[in-house]
Image (tube, rainbow, N blue to C red; front, side, top):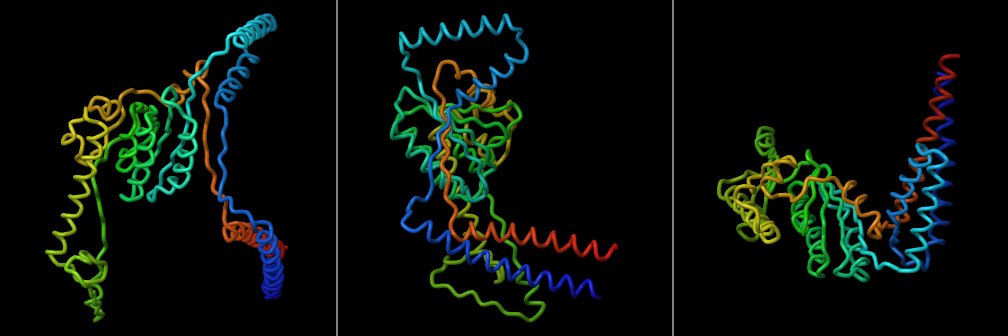
Length: 339
């Protein structure tokens, strides 16, 4: 019993210290953030440097001294030649989109696109490395609309799918002038699905009434707790079909080469079959595509990073502190118990 009391006392002291730390951090962060209206920042990194470093590392590992000396001489001559006759290289801007069900990455994507459109020319190219299994209709509709800004500006857009671009993910992919896919990537799922649990019978069995009051016949169709009627069910299905028809029309607009009725069944295809059905243009990974252009184009990776709010930063700090305190308390309890 003594060790439990000791552990409780330790936790009480630790929580007191934690509260003080949170207050101090909160005040300090608040003072530091006053007058700072910047919500995030754009980072731009050269992928040419990345690929060059990879190449140099392997060269220094496998070539002998004579070969390295000859290579250095050749590189110096190449640099001198390029300085004498400057080459206006094509620029490739690389964006990444890792989609969740809410397409929350669109908050960063919109700023990245705004930034690149301020400098990109029709002779340049935008490459989107896309990974998404889809999600909410309105969220992915906005994400697709952001990519359409690139097409509307007359800048070539290449979409690379290494693993999956399905449903809302394919809605985004179809905007590309060219779609690249790994052979075993999953694509398609041009369909709409909705699932709604209903516990009305369970509530009724326990004599619990739920009243759903609306003004307008279809303000609410299917519900979770109320009794669902056949007219409401049919209206809900009608709304799903309307969304599906819009989805099909959207894909057909950007991929007119598709037999839309064949591919808009909600099915998913792997890359090789997707190419046969014209869902993708080329079977190729993003690594192969970008590394191929590393010698002849300037490649830049763009990432917009949102600044975390005061509450998020304090929450992360508090969570880490609590985890540390709990670990220390558990260690002390174990020592007491086993000694």
